Length: 70
Image (tube, rainbow, N blue to C red; front, side, top):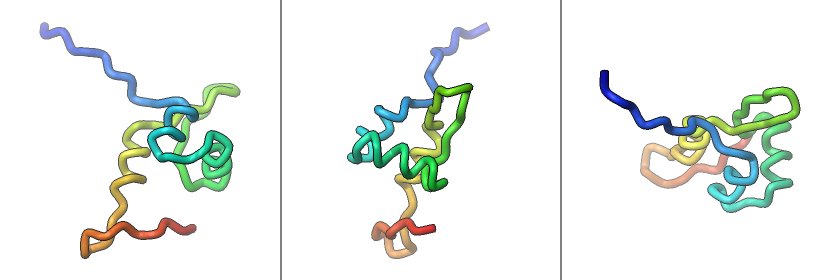
């Protein structure tokens, strides 16, 4: 059997905020507004990397970034 490297599939809210270039407080606000996907384990909130990647990959047909609204 081949050894597979364990890769964390989630990031903390603080790390997600750094990746997005926003404050931690804004990241929490966007989570509570449903604009950033998250998982909650008790009081601990983590952001799935795939959800963060999807959020960053949202683009229009012309390749330009779109404003994300809900």
